[in-house]
Length: 495
Image (cartoon, rainbow, N blue to C red):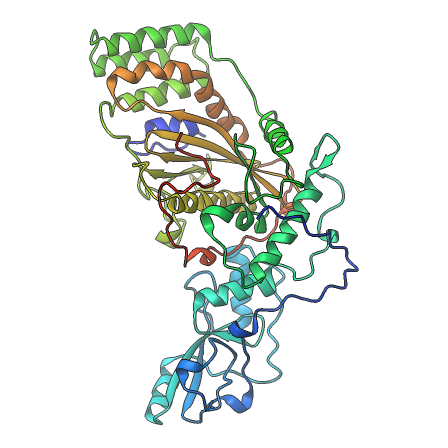
């Protein structure tokens, strides 16, 4: 079923309608000790400390075991809230169930409190201890252990590092067979090694810089970025050499159709656009001619998508590139987690929502911080991965527009715990009438994107559940600082 048309978005929708050595491979029998949160950032609570610490509140460590305070004039009340959203729960079991159902994180351990029940943050306890003259300390309780945290972002980091991602990863996690091979190179095992190293990094106290280490952050979630560029400072060259990355990208793109654009249709488009550029035809007549060509019996589905994209673009020339801002169905609960654009597919029977198979992020000016560009790209990777995990999709199309340059990517789950975010095409759209003929040179690229979206961004015939892996919490990026626009960075989107 064709995705519904969003206002002012015909063009987009028609097209899409540290160099470090890798850590040694962990075996099941590995004797390495579990990783722990640094002592400066964690502590625990005991029954005796329901109201107790001689240290002033400003000197207390931010993470404690529930109710570990020695000052008898203080009492800790713990909030039972999801680490990743604002959902509140009454029991920790319900909290773990919510995290599984809403965020896809399974196998979280049950909470062990050694028979001690923490004091819950609620109106009754607030009134009770306020009337007793107590100083109330509010903390966020972990759903799987006795830890509590003053900041919700720290709670999310703790849950990710200690409970979601194994502290002693083993290759036994990877299903046997189905590895991704490039010649004699096992990309699945190579990426496994790299992911282990990245997990070590996020568990350490080493600060992560988004615009220079986005590859490492994405690798924790199982995502390998493959752009036209084939050298990254944050990827270990001895593991992922430029030649191997280039071959990996070619291997991904070879899985998709590469049809030639119909020469007769191309010639007619060139004539139509020439008349438009030379002011022989008005914008309205030009668009009507394109739509007429679109409806011709000899025009195939791929060419029709490209024609609709061009017609939609001409409606806004000369002008700035239009975009859709959060124009999406309400299936995402939190506005902050919404992309600028997405395509929702609905079932032909009952018209119920089925899945989302395309996402986009738009920055109308190229003169912005690289950190914001990388942050948008990181969000697209998360959206696409979540769509694959939740709806068992074979591929998901994404695009990132920076000024008039649009870069298309496709995410695929190629082998166990290896999601590839592969650059497909980069196109510079005309922003003035005189440049409209430039579109003729991009007809083949537009056709490739249209065919990829229509034929490959669909539910997979294979059950991919055994290949999926957890996703790093977005709260890791909350404290990201912006970098200057001219500072070099690994992601290339605007040239």
